[in-house]
Image (cartoon, rainbow, N blue to C red; front, side):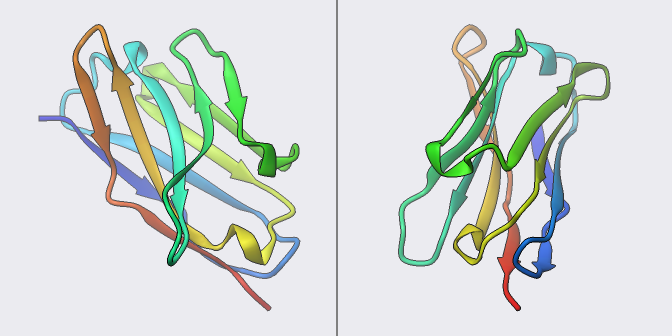
Amino acid sequence: QVQLVESGGGLVQPGGSLRLSCGISGNGKWFAMYIMSWYRQAPGKEREMVATITNGGRRNYADFVEGRFTISRDDRRSTMWLQMNSLKPEDTAVYYCNAKSTTLNFNSWGQGTQVTVSS
């Protein structure tokens, strides 16, 4: 059974940086076929997409990212990252990793990692 495991969240001051990781616990042999995404959910708000990277390496970012975040993946290591720079208090949220493949009829979420941006 495949599970996604996030790490790297924490407390950071405004303007600081964090790097989130998402790995596979279990059989990761299909990782290269997944569309990988980061979502976030702030208290009282709906979950929203932050960034997506396809199995071909194409990246897409939400407008609020404004060039501050970079999504990347390494299929040999079955791992995805989100490098977040110039963090703002409004980036405070629980960040979730998502893996999806319509071909494999697969859609899975991680447990989430808390990111808090505060002075």
